[in-house]
Length: 355
Picture 1: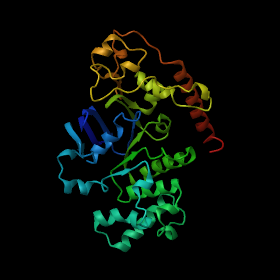
Picture 2: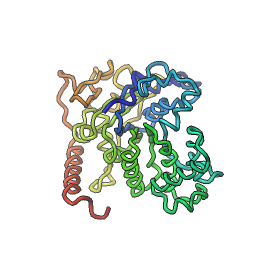
Picture 3: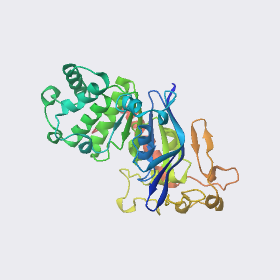
Picture 4: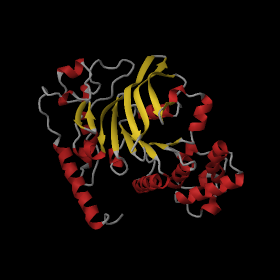
């Protein structure tokens, strides 16, 4: 596979009345053709700002201070407004968290799905509406032909999210950015939307960047995972590497805070403390104040990326050869055993009873 997207040394600042917020701090990652990359982290970690920069949809007070975003080898940051309009919604599209803020309540859904075709391909209205109907069927809207004239309020939350996905894929984009697309849905509908995205990815041969705060969702869709904290990527690797061999204490915290069927609700883990103020980022490791394993060097110097494998890197001083040995928390080991047993069950029986 070849790289369709490369983000290199991205730095984004926000000018505010209080000062300059260092929102994105030297972020680099890539996306391969046909791949799903998940970007994971708490609210405020910089996930959405990072992906919105790919579409050049940042707030007016945001400035890209450094870096490049290469799409098919060309830097998006140097494109004109007209060139970006040709890319946005056509070659790169976005699925937002809340479909009701993405859909026009005054326009029938058939017209809304057809609109990108009319905008980017100068397609006749009849042909665009026919294509919209086909795509609505593809995303699982029942009785799509009859429902083309219905309005967003006439659909359930899960159906509205399917309509938003239909709008995003109608031009068969090369990249789909899904920004927390299942957060507002119940777990059953979440699973259906994730399965739909995986199915559509194969059918239209696209790449996906999936933004979420929930590592549990990641396990079902991603090939690789980038963990973000305080405007930086702190660990990235394959999904198996992040789940079964995590190396950064922040990743441990995210994994520990995931509930399972065996979790005692009275003992649900939460990462202590709060993220740092990015008006004045810490001199050292941004996670040091919340890290029970922090050393003196964490307070003084930002850690580089240490190579765990050819595909797995983590920015933590715990991987330095001179660092003391720290074992993965016992709760994560138990969780990994739980996932392993579940995977074996799925492979043996072809599914989990009750799905």
